[in-house]
Structures are given as C-alpha cells and as structure tokens.
Image (cartoon, rainbow, N blue to C red; front, top):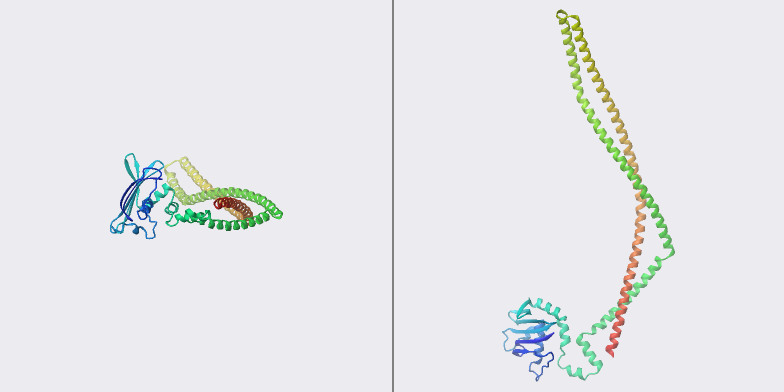
Length: 396
C-alpha cells in the first residue's frame, strides 16, 4: 500500500492538515510535540477507525473543539487501484465511514459503515488492526533502547511487538498433542496386532463359512418364497372360481321360483287341455284331440327335462365349490408351514450376519483411524522441525 494524500481535521493536536505524499520513500521530521506521531495515528485511524491510545476514539478529538467532529480522509494506491477512505467521529453522533474506488475521473462508493469498511480494508491489506499496529508502531522511549540493544535484546523487543511469544505456546501445545498422538498410535498398534492374530483369522474363516451356509439357506428361502407366491396365485384363482360358482348358485336359486311357476302353469295348462278335450269330444274329431294331447305331453316333458338339467347343474356346482374350499384349506396349511420355516430361518441367520458385519466395520474403522493419526503425526513432526529451524535462525 502507498499513501498518496492525507486530510486531517480536528484530530489530536492537528486543527487542519492536507498532506500529499509525492514519493514512495519519505520521512516525517520535526521537534518533539510538533505532531509527527499524530500524523501516523491519523493514518491508522483512517484505515481502521481505531485509536492506539488507551482512551479510545474520544481521546482523539482536538481539545480545542470538544463538541466538533474529527475527520480523516486518506487516498492510497494498492495493486494499481486507487482508494479513498473517509471517517468522521463525534461524541454526539458517533462514527461514520465510507470507502471509495477511483474509476477514471470519478470516485465510486464500495461500502459504508464502520463494520463494512473495516472488513474491506482488512481484506485489501491482508492485515487486521492489531497486526498493522504491531508491525508499524514502535512505542516512544523504546526506539533508542532498540537501536543500542544487543541482538538478543532486539529480538526480545521484536518478539513483544509481533507477538512471537505465541510460538512458545504453539510449541508446547504441539508437544502435548504429539504425546497424545504417540500414545494413540501405540494403542492402534496394539489393536492392529490383535486384529492380525491367527485366532482372529480362524474366526474370520469360520464366519465366512457360516456366511456361505447362510447364503445357501437364504437362496433356499428365496426358492420357497417363489413357490409360496405361485401357490398364492393359484389360491387367488381358486377363490375367483369359488366366487363365480357362488354367483351361479345364486342365479340357480333365483330360477327355482320360475320353475315352480312353470310347473303350476303346466298343471293349469293340463287342466285347460282336459277341459278342452271334454269339449272337443262334442265338436272336434278324435284325431284332433289326440294331436293336441300329444303336443301338451311334449311340452310337459321338455319342462321336466329343463328342471332336471337345472338340478344337475346345481349339484355339480355344489360339488365343485366343496372341492375348492378343501383346496383353499390345504393351501393355507402349506402357507402357514412355510411362514414358520421362514421365521425359524430368519432367527438363526440374522444374529450371525450382524456379528460378521460388525467385525468387518470395526476392522475398517481401526485401519482408517490409524492412517489418519499417522498423517497428523507426520504433519506435526514436520511443523516442529520447521519451528526448530526458524528458532535457530532467530537465535543466530
């Protein structure tokens, strides 16, 4: 990042300032109290909206204008892009902030508000406020001691500024984590040794044999199930035939009143014919009466034959229905026997399959955990070696 222009108003001891940074390299000089540090603090406030002082942002307002608003405006260049960040703060109205990017001759607002601008600045610079402060600011009074100090003393100052003490904490945590992982690795080795034991292999072989036997039993169950399905389909067909027979029986039963009516009508017809016969003895010749009598007997015979045929059909349907009922009972008994056999087989097979699957899953889980822990242990050892090399370089 290269600052191009800084405008400051009512900030610390600066009432008004318009500072242009013409060169890439510059130095700010002046007597004590002239405002050199204030310029750097204004630059920091413009970027992050925070104060490096203990009193917070309220302590940054010019003492001569306690009711006014302080204002900073910083133009800077980053990766060939020009930006302008503007901030204002007052005790009454609080903070306002905006970030703009230059496009041609115009400034376009990217974001506004303290939170949005801070996040965007951190993203652009790759530094948060604390890291930027530790990297840029060296407290007054420590500059001379830093210059005149020994290499180990300067390293202590830089360690304090950059927060390198966290490396010691990381080293201790890494060592503790390494101890835990080594213990875990030892446990996994023991588990692996147990898993590779010959007795376990024999158990696994036995289990595989049991699995093959169970597979055969399952295949037999599937065959029985197919036969059961076929029998059920036959039972459904018989049930359908039974329904049709019942329907036929109902139809025959409904025809019985008509048969009775036909019999009664035949008797009436016979009586009528007898009466006609008596009458015909006086009006018609003997041959005519005999012909009519023959016709009447023929009709009566046909009626009897129709009645006998209906009764025969009814009896046949009844026998067929009885046979259907017996077949249905036989099929239900066979189905019950097959269900009992399937239940017994399932009771024997299921626990054995569950045990086998559990053993296989446990072995796969232990293998994956061992591989993952070995990868983590290798990464930690590599990190420790890199930290040792870095520590040796710093001590040197």
